[in-house]
Amino acid sequence: MKPPNPSFAADVAASFAQQPIMELIGAELSLVELGVVEITLPYRDDLTQQHGYLHAGVITTIADSAAGYAAYSLMPAGSEVLSVEFKVNLLRPAKGETFVARAVVIKAGRTLTVVRADVFSIAANGDRELVATMQGTMMCLLPNPDGSG
Amino acid sequence: MKPPNPSFAADVAASFAQQPIMELIGAELSLVELGVVEITLPYRDDLTQQHGYLHAGVITTIADSAAGYAAYSLMPAGSEVLSVEFKVNLLRPAKGETFVARAVVIKAGRTLTVVRADVFSIAANGDRELVATMQGTMMCLLPNPDGSG
Amino acid sequence: MKPPNPSFAADVAASFAQQPIMELIGAELSLVELGVVEITLPYRDDLTQQHGYLHAGVITTIADSAAGYAAYSLMPAGSEVLSVEFKVNLLRPAKGETFVARAVVIKAGRTLTVVRADVFSIAANGDRELVATMQGTMMCLLPNPDGSG
Amino acid sequence: MKPPNPSFAADVAASFAQQPIMELIGAELSLVELGVVEITLPYRDDLTQQHGYLHAGVITTIADSAAGYAAYSLMPAGSEVLSVEFKVNLLRPAKGETFVARAVVIKAGRTLTVVRADVFSIAANGDRELVATMQGTMMCLLPNPDGSG
Image (cartoon, rainbow over all chains, first blue to last red; front, side, top):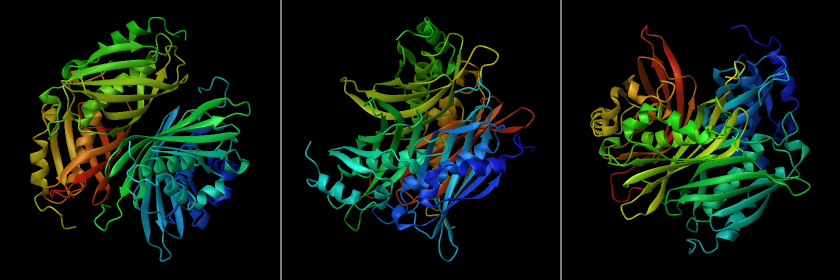
């Protein structure tokens, strides 16, 4: 597929760098392909809930950004992306050394794009488990003044 | 209604104090009633996404904890609560001085409790706007060894 | 509020009359106000699942149409409405003599409208119980040829 | 994997045959494997909404039953299954000759099972398109009197 925005990878990276919350929690952009984005987050004690697992909101934070950027990678240059809605099922306690949110576009539309994001925990021995899965909708705000909102 | 756990307010507060993520983002427990919990979060630059609004994951973090504790307030003493799933609609850009997540139990069951959480932004002049709404399911893990999981 | 479409009530009724599925299941449009729509469905044995309760898909059918028309009531004349997504929590077994889906717009936007729909069962003695609740997104397709899609 | 219920395929078929709504809309059980169920529905004019496409509630009806039975196939003999919640994204207009809901278990738990169900339209020429995707939670009610509820 020819990307609608040839510089999508650089644009995703530039936008990610402008999300201060990612620095606060220590998340990094680890993969950008057309319609696929991964964000990696090392475990930290201060990201947890009362049982010592990653808080569901932190899981959602990396899943939502991965989903938004997966959608963004398929949007025309100069667009903005915003999250319309998402639904997250928490499948297992989020324990592990590292977490990876992998988002894949299911259906890209002119205005709305539907994305799935899986969040995996990776143990010290490399074992990978699915801890949460998100299904969400992202919206494209076109660069021109008639762009819908 | 007679609370199933007479010390629910103290137990919610004690559990909240054990969520390190709340300290990291600066969130505080601001109201605990039977089936209703509010969490308050002052705006901070390092909690935002690329447009300077609160990141959807941060909104979800306070909504999910509020929802979990609203459910927990109606559970038997000694239970644990965990998030099964939630769905969030983002309604407006999350700008404001302060944010409040207010969760209300819709249906409390023995195992599963359904909760709604609205997140409001509060402007410097006191104006209050609904920025997101969550509908989710929380699960009760009973204290006895036969508690379902 | 001044309705964007002065003939919204007639337009909702006309569109509802063009949904053959409503006739198949026996559903009727029972209330149309600005941003609020109710659909009523009498119990029938052939609408049930294996335990004799209304099938969750039937509950969703009336909730989705009520939600779509609640959104449609606030759209400009000549628009089309379509469902983007919805999430349904099933709260209690759907038993009763009659069911009512009541949808209320939470946030109306130019392109997207967020709606909540509650489905109640009504017993022979008039008792009313909430059996399901939906949170969903509806999209406006504007009448002009530049309408977003 | 050894099935927890050796007669799962017969039990799914028997339960499906007891869902009167399936006969009303003309849906058939077309595949039952461990953790995977498909339901097939031929297009019919009386299942549509105002634009002549399959109503989102009908799509949900087959997706929900497929999801429920995919979960049920992995439950102990004598269990009951019920839908806790589901979220559906509508991706394309549901037009076609036949529709297939294919549900696959993502995570089977003792009490809760998370399932994904994709609904495809199949055109006269055999073209297959994804028209909707569901992410939902199913609950197991165990046969013994201490089964959680």
